[in-house]
Image (cartoon, rainbow, N blue to C red; front, side, top):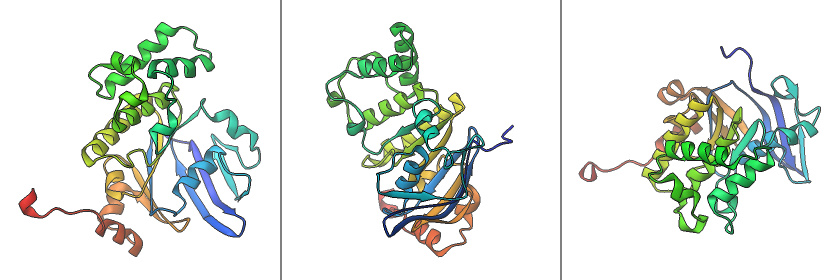
Length: 263
């Protein structure tokens, strides 16, 4: 049962100097749940993920009532956040090319990552990687392990990054615009695969995007972020069927529509 929140944020505020980026932000995320955060560029979505992980620049100021991880207040003990990364929390960044080292094959990078976590049996590591890559619809997972990032497409590299994150078996996966810059069909494929794999691993997913319709495909709940403040949230189907805020309605109205002759 999902009795206790995995992540609970109460009245979080964050700024850079005099600029306020997040304002009185509150949310809850339960084990195995998918929460989508939607909003326009510059609205604070990526900053929220950085606040959770502690990957903030030195000039950031953060305050709030609580930022709880499994009931432990990370605002009261900031050092705790660093120990969570790569252990209980993983992250998928927007640009897979910036997340992968061009001088190593994918297999070598996976092996290096798992060795750092104490997994020294390469055969076991590669077998687990092959299984995850197969679930991500790679027809030849072994050839992916033998490839360098430059030999794979953008969509393939993004799926590799998803595999890398999930191989850590995190309790929480943070995804920062994971389909940015990809074509529509690739976006849909990656989102569906991501949702299925998080279910397989029992991983909670916090995913941010400017595309409310993309989030609607996989999210259990959606929260709408405008100018650093959550203005509306609820079950995805309910929120999309009857949005209460004008900003949410505009997000829905801005979705692309095709003329009938092109369908």
